[in-house]
Length: 242
Length: 223
Image (cartoon, rainbow over all chains, first blue to last red; front, side, top):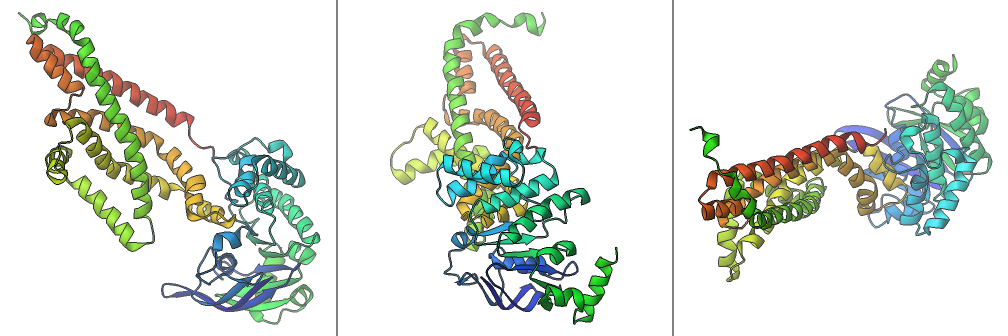
């Protein structure tokens, strides 16, 4: 589903990604973790072309992301993305947030988009908030709406860029619950996150990044059993100790 | 005898219909230059922020040029040069409308540029991430927020524009000020007429600035 081959990226002189390669097959849930500044957010944004990369290749469902001939908007329409800071559109109501992509990008009718939006709000438990504006919702609620907005586009896979790191602790679980449910339904997911509980529960593989390198790319059992790299061991001991 | 005792305000009444036609032109000029200026200014702002270097440079040059020349000179030059280029006279009023639209666009574009930059980059990414094209992202996500954020400043600029329209007096377009001048000459009472139009300008501008205040508190986006 997602193939990343030898991707390197520079910001001017500074190299943020070095020779990153991995594959995510259909139905897999892959959690990407690592210290801040390790390039994990940059890597996931390269997958749907929100960030450009200078070397290597990324293909999503067989379509090359780096190819200038690729119609990126068309590709992105079917790759859901959830951001650290939710990024709901603050000038639109919740239902409008859910409908805008469906009507303007997928060409669905207003009624159809509205119906679909309400169904998804039901699913994330926020039907009662349909007519509110994003600013009136809590962080956790906003992030659940953001997930619903991505799902409204009927994505073939979902990218999560630190979906819980801007949330208060008591709101993290309501978002993770939605994500676990998605994973259990077989959604292909790439998740940048430090939520190791989530990784233990639903991940098929865990990728550990450091200084722009993919240091570890292992099955969940291997990763939590005995990570091969010393750097990953250190990292795990730090975030699992409390 | 005091200054005020010499004033004969009774000449204002009979001149009102004539001054009204001048006011209508002033309002028409302001509204057209505002609408055209904001549309053109928004396009200029998008061009200035565009990654296409020649486009950004051309827009930057245009804005800097317009902002470096006194408005009165632009009005005069445009009025004198266009008939030479096209071979036919254009009329002071049409000339004024076009000049003001082109000139104000430069100022509105700076406001819209700040407005566009006030929208977080993550919003652009969110638009793109659901498959929106550049123009869809701008039209549905960025510009509506930029416009809301900047509405008070856009209106303030419009108040300045409203006052600046009095400069068309220089090319003989019959605006509020020109009408007052003519009426003043008719009755040989220029001072009374100038006092009266100053009052009209004040009332309209003051009302508009109150509206700005009111809007500031009402249209802010809940964040």
